[in-house]
Image (cartoon, rainbow, N blue to C red; front, side, top):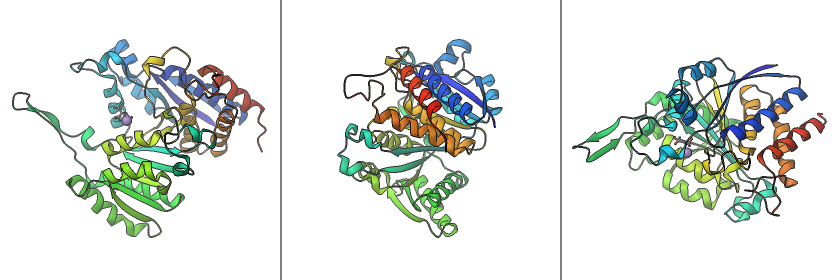
Length: 358
Ligand code: IPM
Ligand code: MN
């Protein structure tokens, strides 16, 4: 198969971690007789510096003409400390999500048996955790009307949802639940917010189409609590943009390291795959960042964008092997011995080459 992939490395550790994901993907492609045609494009602070736009039209063209997008991270501290900056790297991310119609952000949280001790939670609580958040990504308070009034002394951000936006996200949630344990949790704040009441009403009206799926409706504050108490009681969760942003960061630490969790964003155009960690500027250029979240995002890409499950599973298998053998970057090292970003990549590539495929 011929795979056309756009590579958006972005800022901070983005270039280093995507490079290892590229090498691992190429090794997989060679093993299974695929050819990958990578097209690099700029985003984030890197693109602001180069062309003054964090998501330039040329990058959008490349994304639109690709079968999948592998993305690193964006963000740079020079913008964080300047609230008056007119152009910010994060705007590139939001523009990209909107222009590519990436309305569903899929963020799994699972545990690795070899890392169970790394979790800040007790192992008996997290054993067997395997849940997936579907976060709405192109609407809500992120994209609602905002501004200042009262001579700048009052500020507002509005959370608006249309029924169609809820339906298309919830449909993905129901479909995913059907493929898994048939349990779906709709996370909202329907005791207070009108937009949440529309979410609840809409999801309820869809239950009839999926009679096998058992749907629960829970308030976001209660979910925030239960997520750390009994994470393994959840399976598929759907929620709006801001609640999803917050809860998926919370969920990401259950596994023991944010450096491990992949994600996919899907919608009307090309799908995008990215690690959920950020640009981690303190580690940039040091060859110490954990590349596994990006490599596992590449696995999601093989499975979801190209329906190449065996390829995806081989990536997951070698990642598991590397964890079991402690071939890990310093964030995961227990023994004091750690490997660099590229050494972890070397090991994985080598292991892919050596593995016999059944
Ligand atoms: C994320 C990030 C972004 C978001 C930021 C960088 C705009 O936190 O992908 O979760 O809030 O969506
Ligand atoms: Mn976030």
